[in-house]
Image (tube, rainbow, N blue to C red; front, side):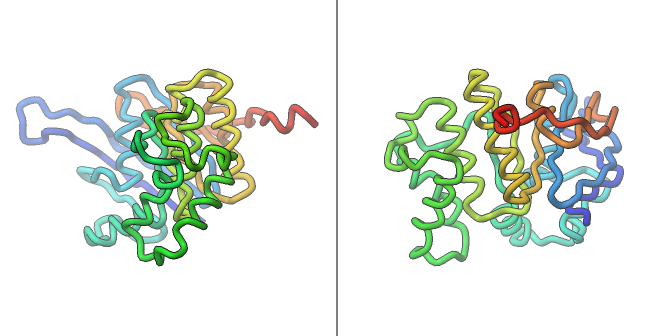
Length: 239
């Protein structure tokens, strides 16, 4: 079943100006529930704009976006906010953690905007932190973590509401190769073992090859859409 369906999506910045910018130019594709899809493209190709549209962080100028069987234009502002909070998780290159706040408190942040009883917050956060192997750092401030640990905390935060889809925007961009590999192993686990749909933006071929499918964007257009042979996970190398 399709979780996401885009039909002729266009995004124009400053449409009323003398020099409007066409960031997305007629993008059409579907993503099924449980897929792991990577979006690749050079700088300025439109891949981050596409991720923002997919994640309800920005609205398309024209075209149709269906999410979970409902047209985006049929969602109210409150419904859009609720979908972002309950059905979507976000992982960013810059981590976006509160520096003088513990891992536990950072991971709990999305619950502030949920209807989950506060009595359940600690247990939910602890479970998410355990899922990314960071329990030993749970009471440390995020400023005390390494880059890889910060990204794992950010992944735990994205997991807290058990979202249908996790959007990862250059999640290994600020990491060394070893830390990046650990982060990608965790993201693969979320897809393969926990069933989350993953949509990953990256410029790194090595990172994209963890996905089942790679969409290539160029000049705001979908240049290619191909299934790939997934890079073997570290666990598979050990077998």
